Image (cartoon, rainbow, N blue to C red; front, side):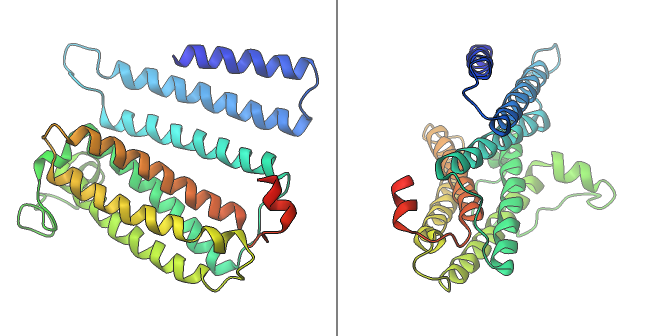
Amino acid sequence: MGEVDGTCFSSSFFCFLWQKKVTRKLGWQLAGVFLLGVVQGLAGWVMVQSGLNDTDVSVSHIRLAVHFFLALVLLVYLFWLFLTIRLNSEPGLPSKRLWKVTLMIIILFGIQLIYGAFMAGTHAALYARTWPDINGFFLPVTPDLLRNFLRNVSYDPLLIQFIHRLLAYLLTALIFTWFFLTRQLPVNTWLFCLKSYPLMLVILQVCLGIACLLNSGEPIFIWLAVLHQLNGILLLLSMVAALYFGDRCTTKASREDL
């Protein structure tokens, strides 16, 4: 499937270049899409190879996370490019404080999605199917936590689940803070109009995460996990849109462009 997509994209891309249907700037931007697609394909091949040998029966969760993260980078880049082309203008400029909070949320959420891949790759939910505690504890007992810190936070299923939960609480608090900051913006800005979407999505995301945890190992788990991942991607894109729109005014012309 990936080879077909790559062939379709590259053939169309070079055809448009030959016919001079794209500008030089857009050409370089689309070349970036192609390059990211190639890197993503290579990461997928490396990931699959980690599960096709005599010792492993599943792919490496580290390689799975790399593959997933690169897919997110490609998706965010395409979404940003879409907004730029569709609006035909530069990104908006919000207040410095709001910009910092928005960027912090996006970075932390990127780390959170990586830990989501760790959760899936290590089946970490099965090690503690309880909430709000983790098998009766707040912090799981991990021998030699500091001595082997990087390995523990990357391979210990209980610690991975703890970090995933902790990041979820932190992100929820940050998005609530972000929501109240955006309420101070003028009502004629795109960001003010869109401010409720990240808040609704993060509340749904937390509920889906808890439902996934409590139902891990059950037949319904796979559907909850898929919805949890999909909603997480939508939440990421909503914050990317918030970063793009900034304090852009909702003029009549801009509404018609959308």
